[in-house]
Length: 190
Image (cartoon, rainbow, N blue to C red; front, side, top):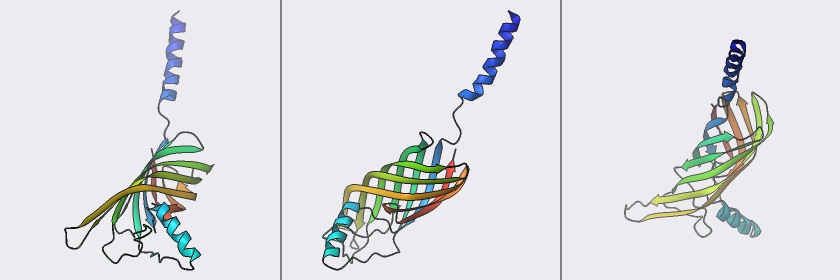
């Protein structure tokens, strides 16, 4: 009987570490994107009709967004999380306001994001991501009296993203939406 109790105690000690939370399931991502587009639907609509007329709106490369994301890895292939992006000097992209000489609006986008991993190795990940949510935009005019603000839906789609590193790594994504055409930064898994 004493041997049976010692065997059960020994086996329970070997099982306890297996019940702990898996390391590396959560990920915090800090990114910097070039040429973000918050009002995706309006910009696609605008570019489509302007392309039919033979001209395109000017898009400047001096448009940047900073993003912060949290991802929880549900399986080897999928992760789910939330993402936020801030653009301090966005371009107006609404259909009737895309040419604007006044002060540039600020935007804050909040979205739900999911990733699909094509390749997931310990130090190299190849993935795509999609995010959908809302963005708020506000403009403070020079006179300090007239302020403009609105909310609208937003999207971000990155068909290709590469992450290098194990627990701490760097990433680069190519896509379209509120994080920018090219988005890169630091990723920390814990």
